[in-house]
Amino acid sequence: MVYRLRVPTLDAVPVVALVVLLVTAYAHPSARAELSLGLGAAAATLATGILGWSEVEATLRHLAPVVLFLATILVVADVCARAGLFTAAAARVRDASSGRPARLFTGVFLLAAAVTAVLSLDATVVLLTPVVIGAALATGTSIRPGAQACVRMANSASLLLPVSNLTNLLAMPHLDLTFGGFALVMAPVLAVVLVVEYVVLRVLVRRDLSAPVHPGAAGQADTPPLPPVPLVVVGLMLAGFGVGSPFGVDPFWISGAAAVVLVVWAHRRGLLGAADAVRAAHPAFAVFVLCLGVVVAALSEGFLGDWVSDLLPGPTGFVDLLVIALIATALANLLTNLSATLLLLPLLAPLGDTAVLAALLGLNIGSGLTYTGSLANLLWRRGLVRLGEPPSLREFHRVSLLATPLSLVAAVAALTLVT
Image (cartoon, rainbow, N blue to C red; front, side, top):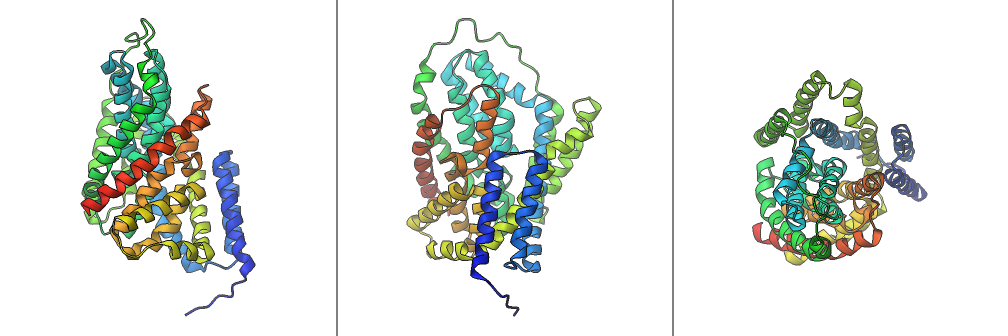
């Protein structure tokens, strides 16, 4: 066994490094600044000697497939957006509403849930939300119900598939489940969560949904056709995830193949060039996530890992699973859900699949509690500001502080019944 000399004050270095990374994520600076700060924080952490090179290698090997999936699925989503897939889908929701705000809200709610499940939560907040706002404006209805549906579904609807959220992908090595097995367990849980979220949102936005539509506002916009190639490629990609999982095929191979096909198709139609495809992959952010993994791995070796480990319960009944979900929620809103996942899941793995899945409920649903719970919340807010429709902090938390606890308790109850 190799022993490393530990100086207590060095434990503060990864704490400071994590704070720097979180502030960077919240500020969302240029790609160059993001890359520089990420590498600097990781270098400072490595200089402490808290992590050996074997531990660093294991961390990077664990994170690499997840980061590659993130980069490739962002390219897939970007091409879909350029091809008009989101616009066409939202237009059909708008048309089906017949100018009725409640029907439009229901359609947007279901569309946001579907996009999150298939293309990940980032596609919902970055690419779908602006389209939803445009659809609301086209029908003369309030943008608030649709915008709230998008941010709520970006977090809560990311339970269904391993590819719906990076937290799920990070959990897969700790689970004795295939892609399809994960979906089978989480589908009834998601169904319960969707019912709770829908009812709560309908009640909270009822005034907006009862407001009259501006005369002549509905039905004036054209309905573009659904682009067949992106639609087919995304469908085949989703099927590929399920087929490849039992054989140990990492999802990034499937999403990478889909990204290549779509980039070639889009390039031939003049929708994007090589530089656009590289930018869509956000390589600086990919490296940033790897750096974050190194910093959190060092924290796990120190006092924070010990403290969290002491809090975790042993058995996995309803109360114990609820405690795990609440701890995950607290950590997600303190550290962001990605950092919390890296810290928490290795500690929970010995407790079994159900404990890990309970943590995912807190890391996904629970991250919708505050703006700091997930980067998706911050991206959603930044997007609305760019559109000239800055969201109200009070309104966001009026919804989240009621919907999140109710959804979380219902989800834990459902998980207890199905496992």
